[in-house]
Length: 323
Image 1 (cartoon, one colour):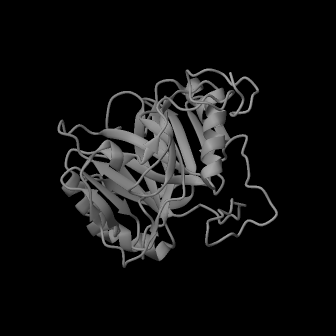
Image 2: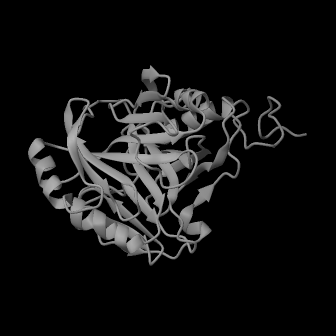
């Protein structure tokens, strides 16, 4: 029995029309639209709900203004759901009932976030991904690596929160939902994955000295490094603001590109994270710029020139041409 990953997230937002365009440009499919709510889907059916702030029935957000207010985790079966219901029945805000015709259970985690579980509605998909040629292994023969004009995210890969008590919050996810610790910044941040075998992290909990609560970012998995670049360039062309990237994380090995998100916090394209098993031994790191990013582009790349922003445009010359 283990949680499979994020099945759905819900944002409560102040500016629904702006967020509608934002997530369409991000590459999500708009499945339903109402005056106070938008329902988007990733390629595998993972849902992103964007609701008007103050809509009746929404859980309270962790912070004022636009923010993430609910995370729904998927499980494999009704039997798993029943076992998790027993595990969290004693937690604050416990709920158990039908949502959209299916059972959904949940509670509040120690940070005050509405956590829900349901039998996963995500569907298996088969997508073509780039093969990476290295010195020893060369699987890409007689074909170029792909170039993406834009991204179409596969799913919500992980969520990151500022928490008031990183130890209490991580203990809840470990003891009640079976999450495993991957790596940590002692007394500061903990990377957790849903099960012993899986991607490097499905959740990152980060405690700042102020012990404030809120969303840091939501990360969307794309096929490969080329889609990180293609998606980021397209998003830049649409006028959205880079926070940092593209770049590469040393802790998870993933390539990333972060943008500012009008729905709250940041949003990330990422690919090529480490895959772990129960044999993995969690590591400890001290926070620092070289730990966060092996390399990163400040301000992003311009979607039209394909160069770092605020530098001279290319002049249709080879790099070896003399001035």
